[in-house]
Image 1 (cartoon, rainbow, N blue to C red):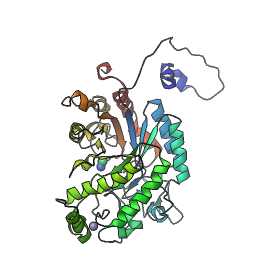
Image 2: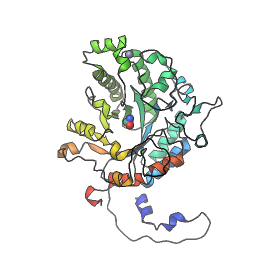
Image 3: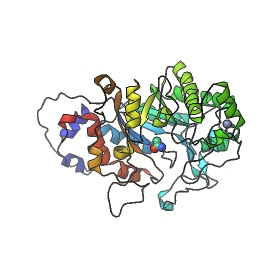
Image 4: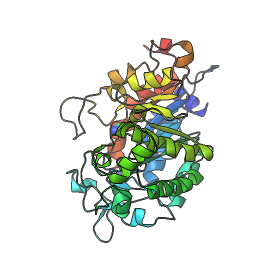
Length: 389
Ligand code: ACM
Ligand code: ZN
């Protein structure tokens, strides 16, 4: 309601400087009945690739609030960095939060997070996380943490190489790519580790959903690992895709036992979807359609409309990861596919814009990439389809 009132103010209210000059303004006298079309109106940020300090995350939340977003998807771990303090495993941040250098070739002047040894990175203490979650909650935003598995795990494996199939050694990745070294699915220690990590994570995040990643996990190591092959045999699985499905289902059982629901990228459909999982459909909408047809909840975030790390204009833009996604295309998204039945359509929880940060080193750049396209996505998330033009 307050955000709607703010939107009724004349634009000059927002362009006043902060002098004590008295200004007056009026708003129209109106009665508004309004409600959001979708329950999940999300933006995703990626401090794993370039760390974003706590104050910048809070500031990002402020702008989300103005646009009535209500979910912040917090991508906390990846090959290039582990960003959340875990008390039981201090090495995760002592080793995993830092890399030798930026590695993405960005302008050094844009980078600020180096430690005393000159390593590049950073992490949130549990106190920082509590502050971010509380700040968001006070503004009706739920923070959904993502702890990536089984792939995109090199930062964790740099700290604990024994959790991989080859036992390493590894370094935190400098630069992008899809790395072949992932958590070993045949090693019970991996699940002990992940359960312990997740146990601390769920204490910090009241969110019903915990994101477990699941995307882009190469199966090369699993194919050649005796422990992984033994697991496939013992569990009666067909192949490595079913092994990934088994992995995610194993984690789901733990999180369900703690009252949490898992959500993962659409690769978690391959080899069979975990029984209660929600799906984040990113490689187009087809994963989301398949999941909704199977009775699972879905967040639509297709690269075609929601990847706000793509170029937003032609011409002299700062370096981005690729693609081309102008604001008109974002605005044109219809998140509920026609081919679903009325009951299946109810499984579409909403939409989310993703701000992968390989080429986004700081808050001003993050805001440049997010807005104004997130304004368009905000309307997709809030406004009934027939009211959009
Ligand atoms: C993704 O963009 N790899 C989910
Ligand atoms: Zn293995």
